Image (cartoon, rainbow, N blue to C red; front, side, top):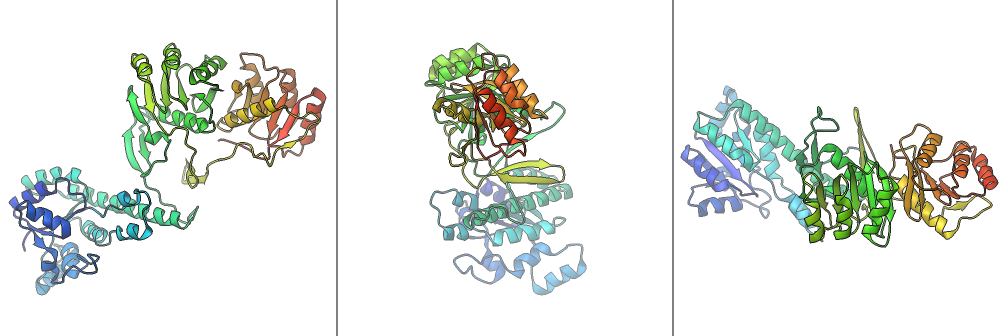
Length: 512
């Protein structure tokens, strides 16, 4: 039988050179549609698929390769005499190499305003079918979906033939490719129908980069991004300066960005190990940085800075004085870059949409051993309709604003969490404790300035009145907490005794 290769690609990168070399190796080329025209235009000698099937392309090109003369040529096992006898009887030639990549469904649905019917027309049928047929018979058929593999296959052909190991690897790439493709289609159709949690969840990600290491140097790690990363997410950031990011860098920076999205006024978030260590809002970003830094100058060392305004010269001069791992902001002025780029190890990330809210429909996911936890993002802070003033003393407007500010921060702090704030600056943050009184004491003890007149926010209810009494001793005058404990009355009575205003928000903000 003749040596044959079937080539039908949407991505024509390197395809002419590949086909030319295959012809040099004695292969007949079978092709379709636009690929056929491209190869003929390059002076090659491909055979039209219709000459193989004995049937014209039809239904606007929907049916081209779905034919026994194609699939029998792909699936026949060369070591099976009955298979080969059947091919000879039916005058069907084997196909030894398949080069196929699929209709650009991803590119199609990424266009703004795409109509459903156009998306559907870009669902490839014949391509995946040929790929799966060829890959199933990998011992006899080499199947290529990635132009990056062309050189390896040609090199092996020049040295005696494509190895079984390479064919097996190419088989794996086919099923990975078609699984990704089908996942894009399924998720597009799921979103069109408003299905939030499907019975079977399939997810698609693209490798963005290998990490230097994982959480610890002995752990390998990779960063994958979604096919269509959310605007304002770390996957969309452009690195302007500094060495490559590590696993911890990405995890910590992601936490800083998510917290920053809670604020509209000029705000700086400092994070360390995924917990905020200093947050401040001000009229200018330089002022916000100064206040965030002053709130905990020890913990900010070696931390992450996220800002929702351009990093200007004044801010850069402050940052330059301390060791910061990463600064992420919508932009950097030229003067700021001139200053910060003198620091060799600092990473500067530009993310123009950093302040954009997380759009509805995105998952918050956590991998656990043997499974995957999936939930909505916690997209609320304080619902004004749920606020209940439960104490005799009502909070002032300034206290309400500080309670809301503190609750925004506590929402992004590992539980159990307590945040103390005043004048839209964090004073003390208690995080990751196994009981709430320890988190409260930690926040108070870590406050570098007086907490008199400050507001306190708790991510969950107070089971006892001990947190209220510790807050009273620290001079805190306003508390925000969800409420809902069977012993709420103890905390309310303690607040009334100590002259503290307390509101119940009705919403818990655990972060585990």
